[in-house]
Image 1 (cartoon, rainbow over the protein chains, first blue to last red):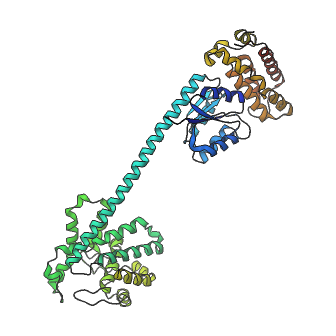
Image 2: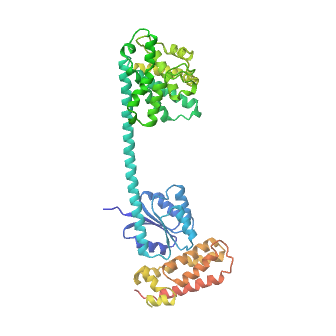
Image 3: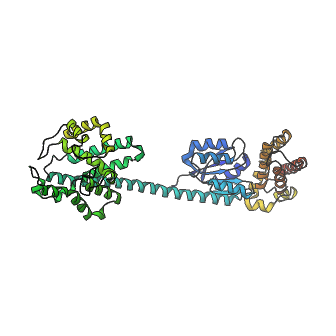
Length: 359
Length: 118
């Protein structure tokens, strides 16, 4: 059984209210108000249940336009149908009411049966609209939840891919997690220190997730080079350097499966995370801000982690040593802005390094 | 006096009233409510006090109720009076119009008393 709707009748003349009440009594619960102020009280008290508002214009205290103005201010003018019942004959008044967004304008003298039809139609229309809005809202929520799940799956897949590469490199298995953590931390400080860059929270989150892809190209580097414990020959080092290009090639194979912006971000990280600020990096020798910002950030995060963890070819440096080496240019030139941020968050960085290593 | 005779005496529109309100019983019910409304008294007080905002509102109410009850002549007089104070102080002599509204209203009230049950 359908729930009865409430019709609010607002008119300062009792006889007019009675006329309308008799029209709507069968089918609607009736609430009455004899001026605009009372009408607003009734609306505020029972807003959710109101099915339709029948509003006179010329009334004491607050008139009909005052009610419309207030409802507009409160963004409630389209919550339920509003039908103006007025003796005003001029078009300008009707136009003014309609411009507020009222559903209908009924002139006195009105014909009861027509008023009833108009009210019923307006209520049915709003019901249908509200049902549709609810469906859209539910579907949107479902879609957002699925998008979140998909994003989580994507992130896990990317991380898995990075971990496969890492495992093959015989590394600790936590390099990717630490680079992600450092990237996120640097991003957060970049956002605060350089507000003019307008870095959003979403971007920082994407940077961190995408950073897992930075060494994916190592999958194509031969074992005897990748796993060589001793010093690499110049030729072997040239091959290692190609992991930046290989990473992009690996990504290219599945390009159609990626969201465009995210693909671009991962691609930039894969390709440019070994570029140096002074142009001495590889593979393209980009210089300064030719290097995408995300790659500038991941470069520092990657280097810091490489320094502070043990590798087949080196011992782990302490966080202080790693900091001094990076700031002193021992590992090449990094973005001055990112270095400035590293300087600011030095201790937090070191704590994170310890925390992520322990975990 | 029956409903049809009533409308003839007060220069109303019986056919229109029946067309909208459908039964004489309903028409009589609403007509008998008319003396309970205080709008004519409010209108007279407001005009006497020079309170043009209230004068507009009360005369507007008289017009609206009369229209709904198809009391055509009273509605026309009230509409004419109402327009004189629509934008504040009247620019024309309203006294004659006010007297006319009162006269027609009295006629309606007098004849409502004589109305038979429908």
